[in-house]
Structures are given as C-alpha cells and as structure tokens.
Length: 502
Image (cartoon, rainbow, N blue to C red; front, side, top):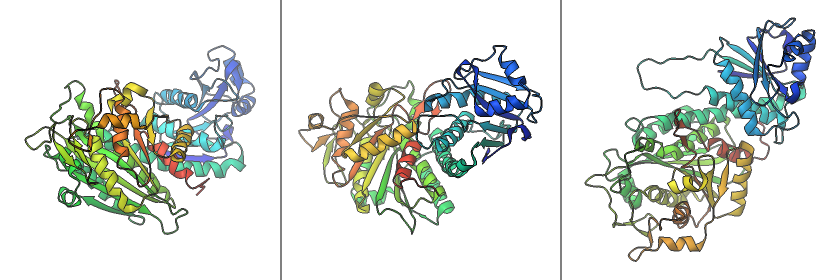
C-alpha cells in the first residue's frame, strides 16, 4: 500500500471510498458536516433512519451520494467526540478495515484529522496510529509455498488533513510511521518463519542483507562459535552445544557522522530460533510456539531497520544473540557448572532457563562498546506471562531515569509495560553451594529472579530488561508474532532526539 497526506476538497475527490467519523448521538465530524451540506442533507436523512448511533466501531456504508464524486462514503462510529483513547482509536480503524476488506476498492481517503485523541501533538499521532493500525489490520503471515498470492485490492490510501498548517507535522508523522511500520513488518516476518528455515545462521544472513541495503551508516560483525570460545563465552556456547545448527551472534553497528548525542545505545535481542528446553525438555503440547523464542532478536532487527530508514543522528548497536537449544549427546546438563565471559560461574539447575545464559555473555560482550544505555529484549520467562498476562510486558531496570523514559514511550505508543522489582531478597534465591549463582531460583517470582540473574552482568552501564514472553506473539486461531516492542523502542529512540522532525 502507498500512503499520502493531503489537504483535500473531499466532495471533488475522485476516489473509491471516503471514511469519516460520526460521534455519539449521531453528532457529525467537521468533514462529515461539510459533505452532508454538499449533499443537500442527503447523508443526514440516511443517518436519521437509525442504522448507526455513533458508538465506537459501528459502521454504515453509503453509495451514490448526491454532489459527491466519491463512489462510497463509510461512516465509522467514534464514541465521545471530546477525547478518544488511543486503544479505542485502533478499534475504530480496525472496524473500517473490516469493511474495506470486503469491497473492491483501490483508492481510499481517511478524513479523521479533526479527532481528538489522548496525546500531545494530535495530528502527528492521528496519522501514525492510522497508518500502523491499517498496516497491522492488513498484515498476513507469508505462507511457505510456491505460489505467492496478493489478495489486497487497496494500493492508495490518503490521509486528509483539514488544516494546511498541520501538513508539516503530518508529513513528519508519515515518514516516521512508514519507517516504524517497515520495522514492525520485518520483525513479524522474521519471527513467523519456521525454525527449519530461520536458524542462527539465517539471522546472520538477514543482518548481511541489512548491511548491503544500508551500508552508508551500518557496519556488521558475525561472531561464530570459534570466536566465542576465544572470548570465553562458555555460557552462550553451552546452550547451543546439543544443536546441529551452530550458534552465531550477529552485530549491527549504526552511526551517522553528524550525531546529535554522544550516547551509545545498545539493544540486545534473545535469538533462540527454537527452544526445546534441552535436557529439561518442554511438554510437547504447544512446543511449536517455541519458534517465537527469537522475537527479541527479531525486534532488534526491526528497530535497526527503522533507525536506518530515518537515518537517525544516533549511535545504536544491535545484537542478535542467535542460538538453538536442543537435547543431544553434547547438550549441557542439569548439574553442570559453566564459566561465563565475565568469569562468574553458574550452576545449571534447569536447561530450559537457557535465555539468561545466552544473554549474560552477550551483556558482558557489549561492555567493549562503552555503552551509556543497554536494553535487552527477551521472551524470557513463562512466569512473566503468569504475572502480567498477554497484554503487558515486564520491565526491569537498574536506573530510575531509564525506567521513566521507557514508561513514557510505552504510554505514547500504548505498548504497555509494568515495572517489577530488582531487590536483594530475590537475588538470594539464586544462591549456589558450588558456583557464584544458579541459573534458576525457587518456583516463585521466576520473572524477577531471571532479571536478577541478568543484573549481575550489567554493573557497568544503565540497563533495562524487557520480558516479552507474554506479548511477543498470540496463540489464538490467528497465531503469529505481534511485532512488540518495536514501536515502543523506536519511540524511545525518537525521544532521545527531542522533537526530531526530519
């Protein structure tokens, strides 16, 4: 789909469908009021029949409106005129796309710029939520077959901006939104691939493709198992020992010459392309979802695409910690003691607590970049799903200011996070009588003890950990990757630039 912003004269637009807002008690939006006037009140006469009340998500499709060139008008209920929550706005857009999917339309105009949603810089966020919600509604998992089908009719969507003064903000929003959407879609596509295709080597190939496309500002490095041995990354290596597919850590270094801030921000993504649990094997039911245990790495990949597309004046380093956890004669075992890259030792109590072992060496490795901020993203614990469900990601941090910045980005994007504590009482649950730590605690507070484990390797920088085990994918009939938290972290990076409008 191609997206545009424009100051339209709606009654003269030769398009297949114009989509307009109608509020509670059938109150018309400004755009709808103007078109109704052009139609000699024909639209209001149809609304009076009672087929739409203006409740959130209601729709009414009208054809052949007098004095209007557009073939169709779609009215969408938006509820309270004065303030629309962003989550409700997404539902409104989804209602419109459900109708559009059933129609033979190619060109569409959304005229929603007069809506008031609960954020600052209203026109910027209206355009952004519109575009990302539309792209999400029309997203389909790419099927693995020989015939590629494209059932999408729509190829041209215009966002009408009522006030010409707002066009600049709308253009900035469109540019940002397209880059973020590209990142989200890319992360989803990577996450949804089957594990016999998407293994650690495949992740490294995708990183190489990224370099070829954006080499103006990107350099890459691929760390193989031999290099990991030399670096002393024995925890990372142990996880992949039982797998036929070798481990690779893929590094993406992004920077522009004219950076605005000297901060170095590192994003580390857990990339378990399949997690069987190893010797501590998982139950067979739903094990196929463990192809999504690399959603953290996919998120980092998507975020770096957005950064490269917008050529942000920042220094960002992305780490895709690719690995596969399988049982086998070379697999690590419960009872083993591993020496991490930091020199600290870990007693293995459960080989299914493998992500933290891959991440602890990755978090030590990034010290060489002297980072100001490190954020790791991982589908780390089922305990986080138990604690927060499938709508909210767990947030842990050793720095209050960084935590606040991530909360702000969460509120702006409606990608919810909830902060959980890192306190010494939980650190004690990782005590081992033979090593510095064990890799699991007791049966309680599993998400917290996992984060406490990681915190032992993050003393040299500001650090945050996002546990996305509940939010990275859906397991309903339309199961698939969600692309979270790509938008949240893209917004976090945009916020580092203070009202960046390029």
